[in-house]
Image 1 (cartoon, rainbow, N blue to C red):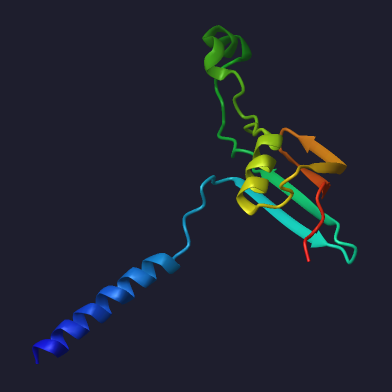
Image 2 (image 1 turned 90 degrees about the vertical axis):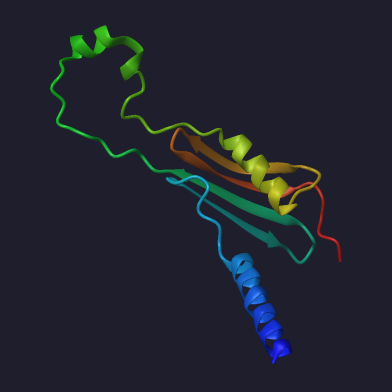
Length: 130
């Protein structure tokens, strides 16, 4: 009887531990979406496309203060209502480190970057190992 209780307790504990490992983590940066797609050609060349999108903040209103009042308040209103900036190149480097893709760097094929994000297509300096 004691062995059945101990075995049951061990099974419950293992189920809880495995369930905790299987759950997905919360999104680390709400309002920021990224995608990373890779392609390995028949000749071994490795290409990727990295896209980063930053959602614009929701505007609140209506506003009752005049422009002169906002100017008088100074830096409190600086940048208000603008999308937040993210360093695109830094985000790309973090993604490449996280995935291990392009360990020896990359060549830029196409690049479009704005304050709201960007997209970069590149080709790794090293080829895929067979």
